[in-house]
Image 1 (cartoon, one colour):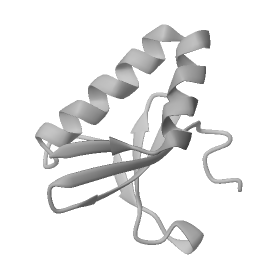
Image 2 (cartoon, rainbow, N blue to C red):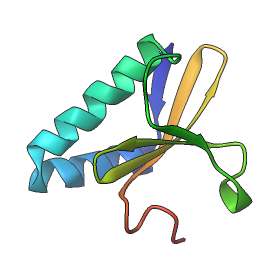
Image 3 (cartoon, rainbow, N blue to C red):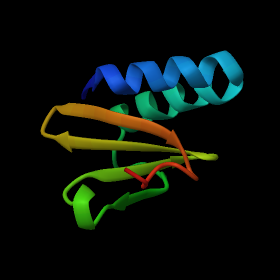
Image 4 (cartoon, one colour):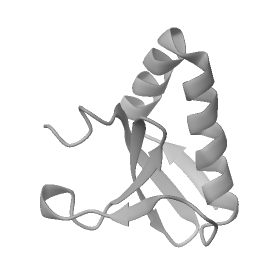
Length: 87
């Protein structure tokens, strides 16, 4: 599966990387693992409300908001769990 990051997600990951390199590396590693094997053992939920039809991947204290249709995984946001759903 091909992974596409939005500009917003790239900025968020680089901001996380500046403060916590271990978490940033784990986020990227987990996203790549999911892309290789979506049926693996991941903490995954389909979202409701304004984020309907998107999925949430939990990675430690961070949440990755994404969509995977067919062979493309589109990463929209990567946020700390306290900020993930407030917009």
